[in-house]
Length: 429
Image 1 (cartoon, one colour):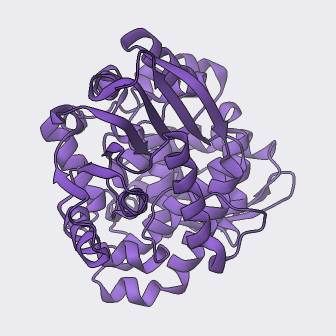
Image 2 (cartoon, rainbow, N blue to C red; image 1 turned 30 degrees about the vertical axis):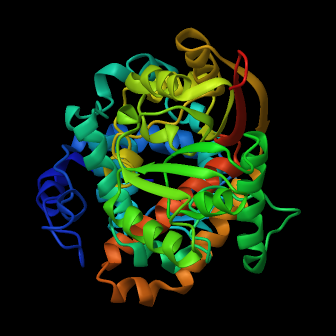
């Protein structure tokens, strides 16, 4: 990647105030407008990025420049000036926004992102890591997961459109990792793999005839339906209006309205006592500040001798500590207020704030990688359907990047997913 000559700085700065082609500036202001970045900022960024990429098993080809890397998946940088300006001013948020703007692309996006995820700890020089608090963007207070903040954060993702999620999910409308019998997984097997995942959780919680079950995080109701089919009485909580409406419709159509209650309710407002609690990939939306409250809620709602089945995405503890106060691309555009915990954080929080005891834990990150691959391929295949729903090209690039970015995290081992069983010691009711 060649360095811009100082004498052309004024010309480049003027050009970097442009609006990215084809991006709606009202809908996507930070994508449409390439940030102003001085020549020194771009030059230093180019030097740091180039030094990192030279050591990676990638091929990074810049328009008008050189090709870097040791060979591997190709990244094509179509607008190096804008690419470096975004990274230099916004870090990894700028990296994602540059993709949304079409300033770089990759024929094998997951492959390229997997290499970057696998070397995430090495991409930033150690001195800059130590100064992370000075240069990394901080999470905005507006995204704190207070009761009002959580409602807004959840709505921004899950209330986009039920039809959007139906476009790439299977008929169970299950938006969490499946459990397959083998790899590579096939789309025709996804619904059964989702039921296998749900049944494993219900088995962990010993849900059966007459079980009083609390579900924290309804999704679109599939787990509640399968629990009701076992004879359980289910109270399911969600903050999403769209999810609740469709879940209630599905419950009525299945004939389980007498067994399943779906409430638009924050977990902190839950009441009652239950034999079992199940929560699937909900903890990622809680935020570190409120993890103790979340686990105390599980404990307080559970009868003595009761069981909690929890499915959670996890990341290595040191990376979680580094990321917990940083505003990320995923938080800005996909999951505001979200934070993926580590297994250490989950287990320490439960130990320090509750009487819950870890009885079992099982990780299966490879299953999530294939789940995401199937969703991503389906989303790509149905791009025209998504466009017909009113989601523009920038949104579709954003969503593709999100699914690919997430898949890459699991393929690289940067992310994992766990099923936990917690038991509340004491006599069963």
